[in-house]
Image (spheres, helix red, strand yellow):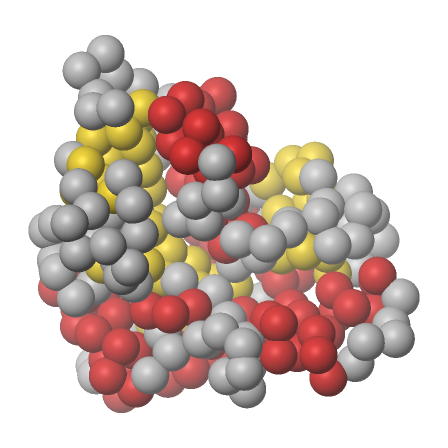
Length: 248
């Protein structure tokens, strides 16, 4: 059966209504495919489980200890969404950071990925319809938790999609795709249906915070098509891909 990797950002999981929308989307997909849902920590500062909130609670930690702390936000999301899925009749399961198969070096806070193994992921996916996994993190060869830099859940989704041989990956945020300006601040912002990898990198370098830069570099290297959209407007979004006719 087809596999789909979809990443839910923190703002798309912040409130109960948003989490229920995410679960409804998963339920719509599973008759046709297996779903791997990569989740971020819920909300943003000062929401209680957001990454920056967790960082603010303990400022005098080593980088290694800080990664242990902030990785908890994604694990909380993983278990909360799994519970909601099961409550709604979805056969779901989770992976821990140690089971996820993303092996990194020990550059805590912004670790580099060494390899990705999918054995445990595929083993669990054989016995469920939806597998919920934590974004933003991996483990060292010594089994220490590391994080992949701000926005690293995007990167997690790309890594898993590429390791599974998929061509597409789906990113759900609080906006319905890529615009030439922040649509929350400028209601006249122009929506783009398609954006080239290099154009997306240029936007990130200019200050856009839609995607993690490393994840777009990885997508470009492996020719992964990336769909960015919102669970509020299903069907409206932007493809980030290699193209000659993309809008600029």
